[in-house]
Length: 402
Image (cartoon, rainbow, N blue to C red; front, top):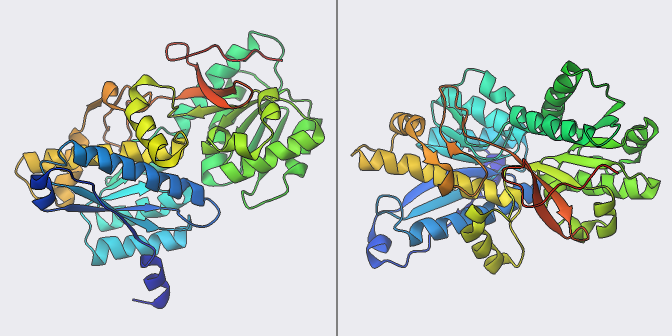
């Protein structure tokens, strides 16, 4: 093993199970690897995923584990770097011979991981990346219980059409140019154009940029009054600060973990957050009744409500648990082939999930056919995210178009 790979593998974190039952504590542990970006430019995604995994393990093992055995997750840091992802995946598949790998990785890293898993014939269970393109490659070993860019795009356009009933709407697109941001925006653009809706401006940027005044100014001068924005936390904070500096106050429909990050009120002027009606298309919000066990446990541990990043791999660990349990309860060993077959048989009803999903069930392409989005909006002086869309799950009405 080269020194660089040794350094990467050295960044693994064991998330140990908490067991209150003597019988469970004495049973053989099930150890499954997971990958996430716990350092680097998007470290917040992996760090929050790690926290969500810890709460999931606490709950699963308190409830009897997996077929009477405690579950443990070994989390590996990828730095969000596809090159590092490939080296970690090589270690896990060829040397460690992992029977399944849980992914809490951003889209760029997930693309590399899915390709490697396909070659190695090891199930890769993605609970983070939303890239729909990965599900169009014909992979047999890639499964995603997450929403996709297609679902996000449809939700954005439905909400946009709702705003159109309130007055003239001039849309612009602002997005970070990774496969995650660009892929979702591309789908939204196609849906808007199919409806004959003209886009005033399309402004991509690199998420490594720390000066977003140029793309924000481009959107402002276009005359847009609604900005559809795909971004991560760091670039959304920088962009909001640029908007405030330019006194630009569009109605923002955000996509991705950035606009809905629970830290936003501590990082950006709260009054300005409300001025721009900051909203986020999401797969989790802490005000959902079905999420309260997770939310309360997370708050007790960390003193803050969980972010969507934290929720994604809490949910993913439960999807993993279902596959492990199905395999063990049928008397089979935890092999790659058996776990792939078990994943295809999973059907978890929505009332057992912390997301707005109707269920978790995979089609032959590895897509979760039960995934659904919600839209949450910052209210109460920019301090609290409230579910506002779709109407059937909304807690409050969305703010009107200014």
